[in-house]
Image 1 (cartoon, rainbow, N blue to C red):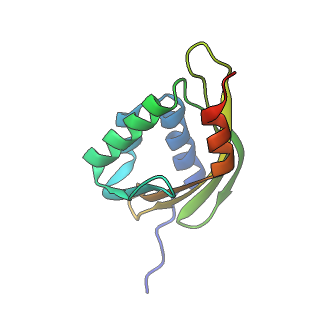
Image 2 (image 1 turned 60 degrees about the horizontal axis):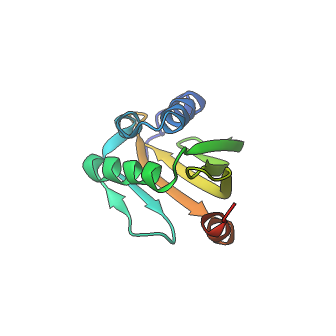
Length: 133
């Protein structure tokens, strides 16, 4: 078994977070491998490949207007990172709200995202989506 290629995962994670914070689906997808996958667990099926990823990521920014990220902690492994964060958003004319999320992101030998799994606190999601404030 060969050793995994060593990458500066902190730098890759920073670039990836910056693309999300910029709400730029093209920039996000540029950091993914061609056959990369994404799944928002409990929300839908796994999405695979750059065209499907770009559509999915654009949909996230539509679903959560004024999308934002509050990072709580970043844990780095050899070929993956785990991000503990809060997704924030603000519908027009309403107060900012959010919910807790956890990402597990795997990186391939080229330093591209091979797989991203996102897990949400669905009680918080429900409360944030139903809030009338």
